[in-house]
Length: 246
Image (cartoon, rainbow, N blue to C red; front, side, top):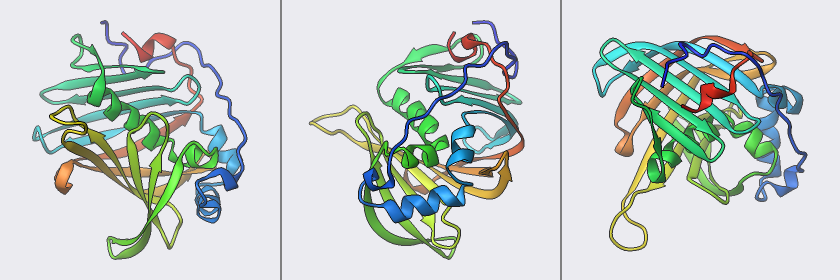
């Protein structure tokens, strides 16, 4: 595969959306309404259908740091994430129901848990929209404190997975943490479970919608993996379709 650099582009397919009432959202209409309002409202969330985010990343696991870029397009469920560290690199690509990942020049298709991890990353970026449109069945798990502040804990499930937990700040109604829960292959029906958790902070209104400019990533057991700092966000950038697959 020839690297396209940091997401150079040719054309854009505009996103579309469907209407769903808050009453469909798993019996949590008030909470969903608060989240939608906190992120800027229905129109702002819908309009954020094509987002390029550029920044820096610290990778604790590799003891390395470098550049980060991701391109998200809601229409067609497309995502490309590039990390270019001092001693390594990785590209992740999601195009509908297929995904690829690996170092530059060695990207391979992934299935099973690695694909679900990539799918979770896409859904994590689009949680306000997914909640607004009734994509998830929602179950309340009570309340916890995040950084000393109260947060409502919700479990989200749809037809394909993975199960997602979110922590919604009682003070701001923004999603301050999210966790994807993925079942790994193993003995028996369920096998071991792993999780990918992210904390969101430094929210700024950009293009009419609230976006986190700092994402802190954790593995199973709360192990710190790394931190991404966004420095630039651009909407509606043209992009070649082959950016999202080898």
